Image (cartoon, rainbow, N blue to C red; front, side, top):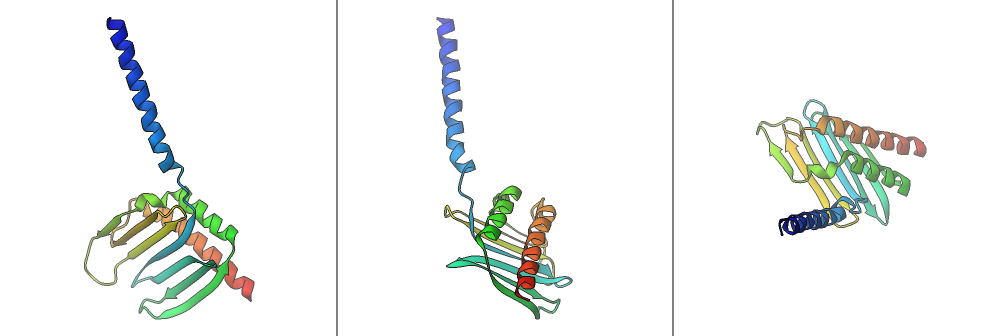
Length: 163
């Protein structure tokens, strides 16, 4: 009888464990194809940068750069192709930016400090929203460098193609 109870207990643990893994799978396999991407960052010392990529019949990139006095000094407004959008989606997923969802922290009320805002919408109707003022997620520096590098490279390429 004890063997039967032990076997039944093992069987129940096995069944429960398998079911919980099956429930997690859809979350890990969500379609995180980016359809809207907005990233703003900066401070009064370095200036402010805005990047917006949205689906508007085609994908469109709008990039604005402001100086320390918040004066617009450069704007890029170009259509991008599907492969550029796929690269952005791949980078967003590689960096797991969705883990920043609901980050919203402020460390100071003094004007002019470093600020960032990130809003991403995915094909599966989920989204990522994150923002901070004088406070960022722990892995922000590393991940934001990669995103900024990609966006600057894309903006430069689009500008050179037009000239």
